[in-house]
Length: 148
Image 1 (cartoon, rainbow, N blue to C red):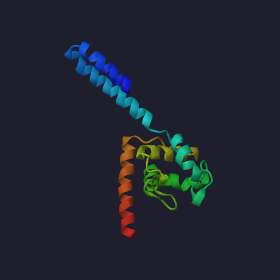
Image 2: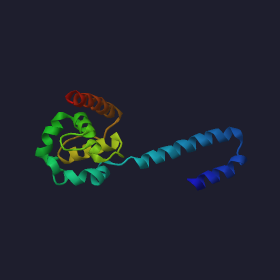
Image 3: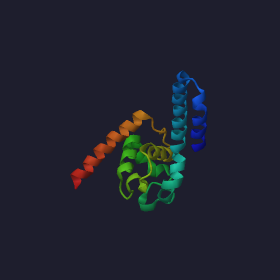
Image 4: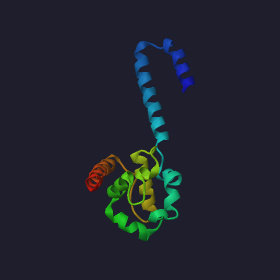
């Protein structure tokens, strides 16, 4: 990145002013898109790095990866419900699967990946699904507060 900035500083004086603004805009979009694309982990990556420890062996009754019988009742609850409840913590599972560094989208991708392995047809979340998950998350947090 530093070498890119150094190169840009070298060529900037050579460019006409009307060319500079569009160039900087386009380069900014390209760089931010590349960084964003590299930063979001796939469901499989998150599963391997975070979920595997409990879901491979069923630690604290976590539904095992690929176990259709264990996942069946969860699949019936719906993607937004299961994801939101896992995100805030459910049963013996800590919030965010114990990984504070995960984004909601990454976490949701991992849940969808595990659901697919158990026969569900859950897709990686789009913006509409993420909105449903956030709404359910807020409702779940209010439920938990009321129980305290």
